[in-house]
Length: 627
View (cartoon, rainbow, N blue to C red):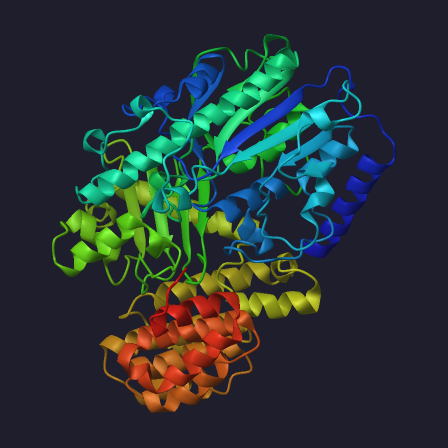
């Protein structure tokens, strides 16, 4: 299919539909108001989700008045990626904005969904977080986006509204910079001695205090939600307003936030629908639904509830309203660069199982992130790991590498600490599950045109040439390229894989394939004997036209104990004006440890230049304060 032709067609259809003055599908008088109450960095640790230490009377009451979803999940375990998926209704991995705090141009046919509501006559407000991972003026899709934004600011009280209130007091930073919430009484504070810790945390005073502070912040957030709901009632709007409460990812603590386990992506989701607005029994009070819901689906669902057509390009599906979609059978999950550290993980979740593929299995789980290292629990994990005082389940998060695949039975292992990949080899039922989820992931990657296997520096360069990162994989050869990338990566992550595959891939016309080929050769030469063909290929890679490929070649030569041949390439890349190429190089300098001692002056230069993410790695390498 010609992707660009499809885009032009879609854009034309949208233009004709939304801008020709055609009446919306639902009359203005009948359209509901829609209120979102969102918070940051919490899992389903609410009283209505049967959490034993939770104190959340407001949200518990909201659940009693509506529907509580028990299988709601974000696309990613971090805020910007989740919010990018919601505002566009698309997987960020399709748009190329799956990297934490990137700024990406959207293709012309993609609208931020509140703009579609505005075009249909809604008054749209956001109070006030955006964090959409896109360039341009985020405010263009809102009537008002500020800490003063409110439905009360609309000039016409009869105009239907879509209002968003984002509470930030539960953010990760409010745990490691804990200050007792002023709204809480002594009786509402959580006793660290009584909290229940997950098994992947050591039981210490530090971890208990962090968990108690996390729960304190949730209780304080519950009071903020009460204020907004009270205002709705005061204005006499509760009977014509659908209320949706959600979180942008799981708990803001290590091995939760940023990761694709339920601890990182499972979130509370509560929807209250007034009786006069219910369709087909949807919204019956005190209902509990185990339907698989992606929080990305809030986009299409909100449009559907408002009677606004859902654009064909959206991956988001409506789970409520007259034209609700069939329930999802699978949830797809993504993890890429988190702040200053590269990684790539993809996941598939069913009602019972989770499958993860670690596309950079040669990297540790807990790479050093300046922000995450401020967490007291993270510091405690590193301290006890160094002292040999963590049990195997707890120590796994600090391992030097990851398995290429992970499989968990969520029914038997809700904390996801027992990887079943090895057992699947001897268990027919598990083997079938594994095969189905592998195929589901790969089919999804092809269908959605996952850009994750293209290095970020390459994405940046190609987007500058053709208009957007999205457009890169809308070419006619995209499916074959993705298949080649996945196959090359699979071999690259196996130190004992077929080297001939890598040698052939190193000659490929696409730089992303060559990149993974040289990454794989390095992984092999670290553990096997060096051979002339592999060395010659790596040396040739130092002259590649792609900076990312050159750094991959330098990495391979270092792992083959030919460090002196790699230093000039690393030095040049680290000082590149291309931030993400520089970041790739300083990552390598960090990996090289003492072998990179001669590059310390380069690290100092990287620090002084002030590029955001390379500077963070440089601070760590130079032992400078991270705050």
